[in-house]
Amino acid sequence: MEIFAIANWKMQLNEAESMSLAKEVVRLWAGQGAEVSELKVVLCPSHVSLNEVSEAIHGTPIELGAQDVFWEDRGAFTGEVSPVTLKERGCRYCIVGHSERRQYLSETDEMVRHKVAALMRHDINPVLCVGETFEEREAGRRDAVVIGQVRAALEDIRPVGNQRLIIAYEPRWVIGTGTAVQPDDAASMHYLINETLRELYPEDVVERQCAVIYGGSVDSGNVKDFIASPVIQGVLVGGAALKAAEFVRMLEVAADASRA
Ligand code: PGA
Image (tube, helix red, strand yellow):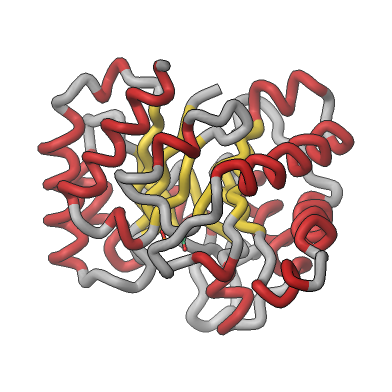
C-alpha cells in the first residue's frame, strides 16, 4: 500500500493562488524522482479551483482531490457539488467529514456515510476524517468517539475493485495549532482504527485497499516521526501545504522516511 501525502488547502487560496501553488509544487517535486517514489501526493483545492489545479498537475504523478461532495448525482440541492462533477474535473480523491464541516456546518455521521457511499459509486476514493475534541479526550472518550465515527460512516460500505478507502485520524484540538500529538499517541488510535477495519472487511481488503493516515499540525519537522510508524500510512496536511517550499520539503522527508 502506498504512503499518502494529502494537501487540504481549505478555503485559504483564490483561483490564481491555487494555480501558482500547484505549478510550484509540480516544479519542485514532480521532477525530483516523484515518479519512482512510493509517496502518493494529492492536492485538494477548493471546488472553484479544481480545473486550474487539474491543468497544472496534468501529466505528473500528483493527483487531484476535492474537499467535500454532495451525496446525490443531480437535483434541487442549491449550492451543492455532485460527485459527477468531481469526476468530470478529474478528482480521484475527496475529503469527507472534515472536523471543520462537522463543527461549523453540523455535518453528521449519517451525512458523512451518504457522502462516502456516493464517492464509492463514482470510483472516487474517500478520505474520511475522524477525530475527537479536547473535551472528549479529557473525558476518556477518544477511542469510543473515533471508532463510533468510523463505524457510522462505513456502515454497509465496502471498497471494491481498485478503490482506496483512506481514513484520516485528526484529533480536532490540534488542527491548525502548530503542535501535533505525539506519534505514539496517534499510532495507538491508528492501531484501533485498523482493528475496526479488520472487523468490517476481509484481511486482504484492509491490506490492499485501506490506509489510515494522520492529520493535525503535520509539517516538515515532524512528518518523519509519523511516517516512521508502521501503522501510519500517510498524512493529511493543512497549513504546511500552503507554501510550496515547505510542502515539498515535507514530501522529501516523508519519501525518505517511507523508504527507510
Ligand atoms: P493543519 O490542518 O495541518 O493545518 O493542522 C490539517 C487538516 O485540517 O486537515
